[in-house]
Amino acid sequence: MAEPLIVIGNGMAAAKFAEELAARALGRYAVAVVGEEPHLAYNRVLLSSVLAKESSLDAIALKSAAWWRDRGVTLRYGCAAQSVDLDARTVSLGDGKVLSFSKLVFATGSLPIRLSVPGADLPGVVTFRDISDVSTMNAFAQLGSRIAVVGGGLLGLEAAYGLSKSGAKVTLVHLMDRLMERQLDPCAATLLKRAVESLGIEVLTSVETDRVEGQNRAEALVLKDGRRLAADAVVFAVGVAPNVALARQCGLRTARGILVDDGLACSALGIFAIGECVEHRGRCYGLVEPAYEQARVLARCLTGEGGSYEGSVLATNLKVSGVNVFSAGDFLGGAETENIVFSDPGFGTYKKLVLRDGRLVGTVLYGDTTDGLWYLDLIRSGALVEPMRGDLIFGRAFLGREAA
Ligand SMILES: Cc1cc2nc3c(=O)[nH]c(=O)nc-3n(C[C@H](O)[C@H](O)[C@H](O)COP(=O)(O)OP(=O)(O)OC[C@H]3O[C@@H](n4cnc5c(N)ncnc54)[C@H](O)[C@@H]3O)c2cc1C
Image 1 (cartoon, helix red, strand yellow):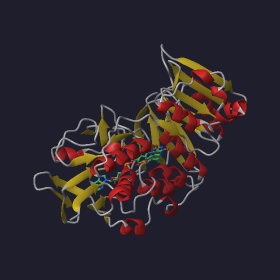
Image 2 (tube, rainbow, N blue to C red):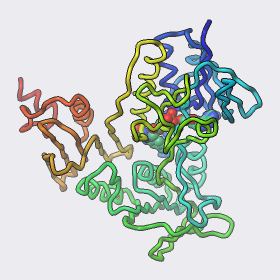
Image 3 (cartoon, helix red, strand yellow):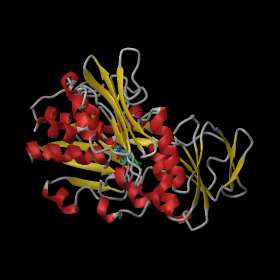
Image 4 (cartoon, rainbow, N blue to C red):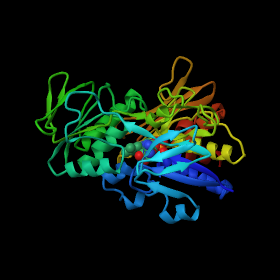
């Protein structure tokens, strides 16, 4: 008989896990996926493209309803899991139903952070995490409306770009002295700022938010230096926190995220966690690739193939049309690393490779990002690149020509 397995969360990690499990052992588990959002699992990464009207909601579904049906997965979306009883091995849902499980997987993702400043809960203050946030932002993004986006990371930049494409006058405010400081070095960040400004987006760096002002709704964002930016809406894109409430409530061990071992197992037998809700070896990831790697490893573990998750090398791509940015690994480097740099600011190209002991450990690419995934493979494999270091910066195609 199929063993009942419940996945809580119907996001990207859950969809990948269902796919990997079905590919390995269709029918071994009776899988039920419980999702709070009233949608089939969708590609959250592409919400930025939906906001920028470069993609539609229909186009971002990860799997069709038929795909789930054909694999025998019971989908319960638009319904939150409200509590888990680890002793009784049951999950209680918002609609009053109680489901039994033998194995349980948490895939509850993250929650967007709202700055705790006065006015943060006024109508017109939004975050950027799901389809309903995109609908809210679209309602504000009218021609000539003024929108302040707080946060100059990947999400803030993509929000600013999408809103400005709809005709809104956007000001992006960032606490740090450069944009995307977690992915870019100062040179690449300077080029990025210039490119974003050329799209008509005002960028203010090294500024701190003091409060949101407004009578019954957001009317202005006030900065700590006293400046007051008139705003019909304020978007907080200041990061995410792993969604651990349910796991904590049922007694699982949590820190920042739900604590898991290399087999993605939590602190109670038969309970697992994957994706952004997870903390593994002290790290929480906010990107999709680690979630997919964890989903793959867990599917292998639960089908007897065995596997171990060792952590992920992070890589980021900015989805702002015409602005190509790629960053991976240790892109800043340190005392024991060497940098190979190619820079042509006039042409809008910047490439930096960080090497340690003859191996590539990080990269930042601005402008021409064609070789990003190739560099990422080299970083992940830990291959010796010393023999080709003279040509490495010119990319794979150049090396191929040289060899021919
Ligand atoms: C606009 C945007 C752009 C992004 N761009 C990139 C990018 O370029 N590259 C990249 O790598 N990553 C990007 N990300 C991050 C990426 O989307 C996440 O890493 C990925 O979605 C994580 O998958 P997950 O399944 O862990 O979480 P999620 O996809 O967030 O799924 C979690 C799901 O669980 C549900 N849930 C939570 N609690 C419950 C409950 N109690 N009961 C039922 N359901 C529950 C939530 O509603 C949610 O649907 C982006 C994210 C956003 C918002």
